Image 1: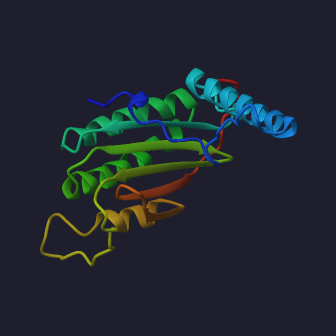
Image 2 (image 1 turned 180 degrees about the vertical axis):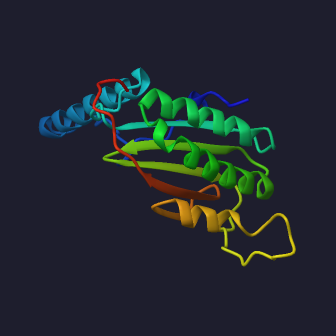
Length: 187
């Protein structure tokens, strides 16, 4: 079962705002009020589900438990969202690559996983974030083994780009595939 998105909202970029004391000069108070108002407006857009982006840009994420049932769940969630966005043509490849990366994350972490999909300017980006700090290595597959060592090779072959990086809580592994964004006004 995916955890609700509201349990892990990222902090907005930029410095934290502190309101000035009444003794601050009027110019400082005016600037701080303006920044506070901008932050409140951004928070309202976030809570309302609007990022201020154009209709051809989409982002969503889900939190998943580190258990094998998260692999088919991640595929279903991605398939449904791609259909909502009109990006069905990349569904099979995206599902396969998500399966590989979520499977790796489930095998190597004990904390929750975060699956993020974003579509922007003809690119679909999928990220799987987990709590394990070790970055994945592309291994040479053993020809006598049925499993293991092939997942990142598939990601490398089927995606336009892929990579990984460390996060404050572990790592994120991502891939991108090319897609034609639909010309419609839904988000």
